[in-house]
Amino acid sequence: RGLYNMKTINTTTELTVQDIQNILEQAVDAAYRAADVYEQDNFPNRRWGACGFAWTNIYKHNGKDIKGNTKMGRALKAAGVTQDYTRTFQLWNPSKYPTQNVDTLLAGARAATKVLEHYGFEAYAGSRLD
Image (cartoon, rainbow, N blue to C red; front, side, top):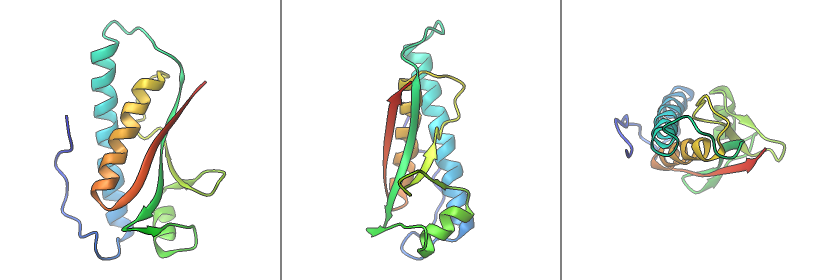
């Protein structure tokens, strides 16, 4: 249930928009799988836990802060990553799993975070109850 099938992307050089899109695709895929496993293991009869939201915030790449006007910031925007109200880059509900269960969604956000960390990003999963 760990990371799998990681593409070889040289993260010591500047990432292209296509590189970022590939990384995001892997992150979303890992997030969905993690959310599905969590849901099946903990809520096999489709019972629900608490309702809420989960996301992954992205702060740095290879130790450098990411702001909207940096090369990395512009590349993230071009790849479709949005910024929240604090201007932090964010993947909102990266699993896109069809549930409102905050624990399931958080499992997905944590999996996305692990993929991003594999490629040199400093990222953290977050959640809140609805």
